[in-house]
Amino acid sequence: MNEKDMGVRKLFVSTHGCQMNVYDSERMAGQLCQDGTWQETSNPEDADFILLNTCHIREKAAEKVYSELGRYKPLKDARPDLLVGVAGCVAQAEGAEIVRRQPLVDVVVGPQAYHRLPALVARAARGETQLDTEFPDEDKFAHLARRSGRRRSPTAFLTVQEGCDKFCAFCVVPYTRGVEVSRPAARVLEEARELVADGVSEITFLGQNVNAYHGEGPDGSDWSLARLVRAAAAIDGLERIRFTTSHPRDMDDDLIAAFADTRKLMPYLHLPVQSGSDRVLRAMNRRHTAEQYRHVIARIREARPDVAISGDFIVGFPGETEADFQETLALCRDIGYAQAFSFRYSPRPGTPAAERRQVDPAEASDRLQRLQVLLTRQRQAYQATQVGHTFPVLVERRGRLPGQVAGRSPHMIPVHLMAPESALGQILPVRILGSEANSLSGVLPTVPGAGGNPPNMKWSLNGGGGIPSGAEPAPSGRAV
Image (tube, rainbow, N blue to C red; front, top):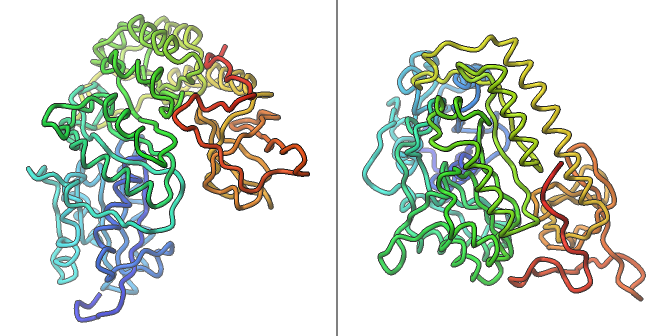
């Protein structure tokens, strides 16, 4: 890349991991593209700068990054002025080791330094390898640009909190993202209004521990997540609000009450528990018991009976016995998950659990398989309860078949139906006709005398229960 070149430069971003990485990638692209000198491309072969935004949660995360970098080496060999960067949690964890192992990398930037990316890229273009994994004092969100006025999906992620103070024994987040930091409420709400102006009708508030949100309010007091949700619900045109990911210890009374009194807050909650064994939970440093988790879920269901519960599980954690695992199965049966994510434990370097005696991999894999059989059965049972009911579905995209569109129900289940493209971006009543492996299929009700499906019927929730007059109420959110 030549600094004297005044043409538009092409940026390719490869995003891995969580929803927060999706949000961060968009902001980094916004930083580079805001003045018109950069433009995104979907083809790395066209790019002048290839940026990998990485995740360190899954097993062998760093090795997968090095493998992807290796695929770009022929491009770098053919074009020495091509810039290559690594961002995200692997960048934070590996630092200079990335440049040592893959000299083709020009920029390594950690999650707290994204706002400095344009300066890093400019110096890299002069041939100076850049490494920035510091935790600066300034608020990066105050500097990260958002590209307004662009055509976009009707759903969007919005980071409101970052970092975690819980220090679970298996987790790298406190080391790669830092301590908990919450964005000021006024800035979050301003960004939410901008997203709505760009056509967004559903926003998911993001945080590594989002329900610990305690951002400064316009009056100078600390706002809770519940207060932020209620304020966002007052934004005209914002029809749906979600949040993820939460910790059971931060599920306070006000946030539980928000599920009952704020109908724009969707009846879906992802609340990881990781294990049903108190002994394992103590070893994980979760600082809650299985019974406390059951109690939280019961209170949420009392506030919002149709809520769909999702969770995370780790099996084969160091020291876990078969008896511990049976307690996890018992908790799953007690809760009845609409969906859940389960993983075999894999050590993360630098975390306390990585130094402990590991469970035999074959035994851990066997437990994971048994757990997934139960969770799959619960998901299928939950989806079966939706058949025959009518739900408001936010139509997000075209489906795989001609004339098909897809969206999600209030309970976060993918829904496919046949509808015209004019349905895209709308919230429409969909009658559920069938349940498939991981989704539902439905149809738009016909309007009497109209002779077919309504192409432009918008269903606004209007702050109400999300069920229009005459429609069936949602079934209980509990899976068997």
